[in-house]
Length: 260
Ligand SMILES: Nc1ncnc2c1ncn2[C@@H]1O[C@H](COP(=O)(O)OP(=O)(O)OP(=O)(O)O)[C@@H](O)[C@H]1O
Ligand SMILES: [Mg+2]
Image (cartoon, rainbow, N blue to C red; front, side, top):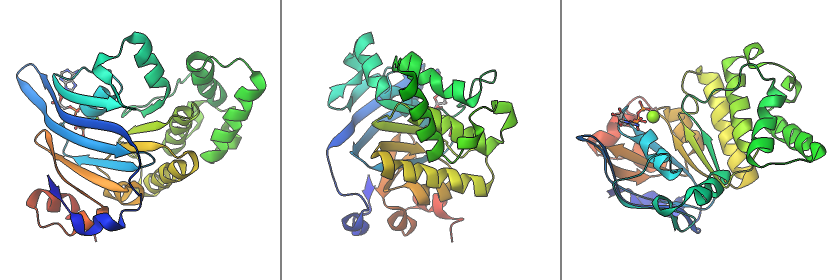
């Protein structure tokens, strides 16, 4: 992997404990080798952005992290434990610590915003205290700036607002790790920027460790402490936005070509 070292010393986040450790990860579907040799360490409190062309296997990688897909080889540890070795109960415990904003993250259309947010609290965390439930809903809605939408239905909200509610629904369980799969796809540039800034403020507020998959370079610029670039089943470069922007590597340059 090309490491752009000059800027590493200035990385925004100091190195802390390793939360996600991936070594030599492999995953094929039939004859198609998608992940060939993925190596990545994500440190506590860090925002790592993964850039890569469509179909590279970015979503597959994060599905391996939550144990939705089982890798064919290599090692993938979260909080020090090998995900592939976890039993159903251990996986359930792990998933309670991980917020996963799906690429197609949809809300329940027949439920109000409040009901959408109650769902993970009562079904996942099994909270019973109504006061605590409503407090958490208010806190997270305040965080995404949509307190006044609590009794609305998703169909009454704009696309950007629905994304915010989706983010709130993921954050409400106070996950230690956040996995964002294309959080700004399909949004206009202004709303994309708002969501990116929200991701950054959530990192600061909740001290979450995050992987953010995106094609949106503005999102990468705003949210990333560190960027890794995926190409042909491997990560081929890593560094800060500013460092990678100066890279001479042809594949890396391709991602930054429209950036001023
Ligand atoms: N469950 C699955 N079964 C079979 N093939 C799969 C499965 N999941 C993903 N793939 C294949 O793996 C490859 C990588 O898919 P993935 O969704 O990870 O790409 P991606 O990098 O997230 O792309 P995009 O940027 O378009 O979201 C694709 O060729 C896809 O068809
Ligand atoms: Mg994807």
